[in-house]
Length: 216
Ligand code: FES
Image (cartoon, rainbow, N blue to C red; front, top):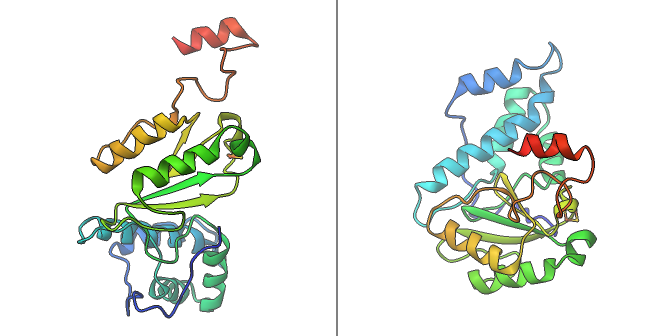
């Protein structure tokens, strides 16, 4: 899905500052002298998480996104042209550049997930939330988007909700996930069918004895 970006939108705040300068210094210090610009990605992530923390206290609440003012502040801190920060932030789908709901529900609809029923997962989300793809619920709790492969095809179909993957989904299980999140609960992430990692649904098929003992 095309990422929504409008650097001049009315919802863009006029300024942004990092609340925790020590976190900024720690991130920049991970890189060798002269390579501080490599910190652009973790600083974008830090900004998005700060906005998410603020959003939880707002009415209605909102989720993590990166205002233009934050990108400009990162450019200033790293002494790089703002366009270089915009280029990174607009390229990677993990950065939201417009307000989103507290729970960003990203449904994978690429071929392996589609073959395993992602259409029904999207439909369940739409029905449960009462919104279409690319929309946010009026209470600010959910945004629904479709995304391309997130590398968990072996446990398809799957969704990513904020930082967590939920895999081996059924429409019923997906509905339950949304209900739990709507109540402010965080359901256990990972496979929803109970399998460990990406082993076969029928159980381990190689090094079976060792695998079974590690599952105890
Ligand atoms: S196709 Fe859905 S995770 Fe790869």
